[in-house]
Length: 136
Image (cartoon, rainbow, N blue to C red):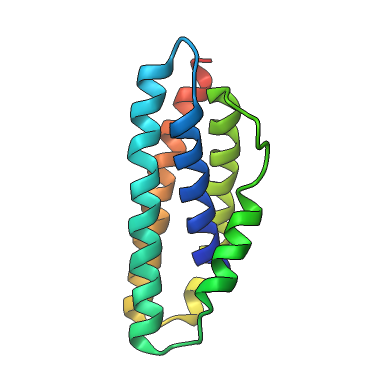
């Protein structure tokens, strides 16, 4: 589950960075969309961390997770083009769903439900990201 938590945190970092530095002719729409993404990742991250800690299902090192997330989100540090950010975030969403798919069967029913909701939300974001990239 550490990898899922780290992936959510990395996506939060990426979306927040993109929100702060994005520019170009689609700035207003992209800035708003990115402003919706990073709190969604933060909420999913927080929900999953609290579930792991609350159920004592496994140990979780927040410091290690955040370090891994920072490394994962450090791709293209000078990037400001919206399309590049959306491609990076879309790949991160696909990776998130793959991590959930691998882990979900090993979890309790409640945690499976939480992970399924996170994956469902991710698939919806993937659709929006693909639509945005198709208009580029």
